[in-house]
Image 1 (cartoon, rainbow, N blue to C red):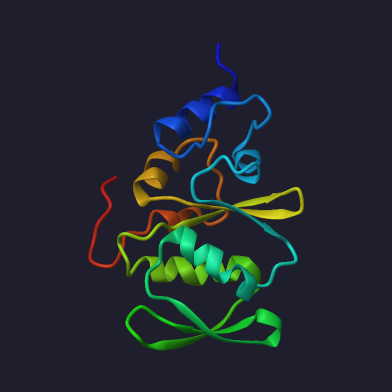
Image 2: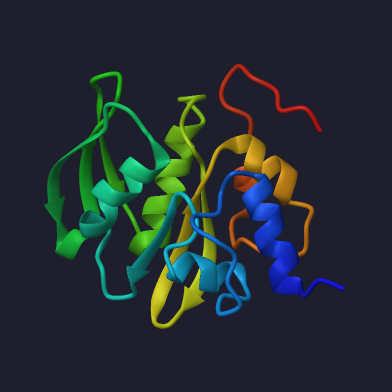
Length: 163
């Protein structure tokens, strides 16, 4: 009988989301993310401000045309130029607030990857940016326990995701 870790890694490999070979060290999604084994996975130190996390998050989500123009209030207030040229001011509460705003924009770009907030491991916030179909396939499995699970299944504007 396969261990839970082996089943998890086999499923992630089948979904095209596991980097490298299976290992016994990483038993959970949090551990795999922290070890750099998830495609689109990010481990962000808890002390990192939203402005510091902006570029790696936007890159991992494959959001096009976003640019950070200005930062205030210790990185909590961001002025962001959007893909359509408009400018928004974001007041975000930590990196999770930044993920929330970026996921909202993700709905306007169907090719972009939503971001799951997996939780904390080793004093770092674990994030996983993956295609919508990966989250749709994995969301009902016990090993995916994202803090923002409902957002991951939100259809992009003008599209429906089959159930």
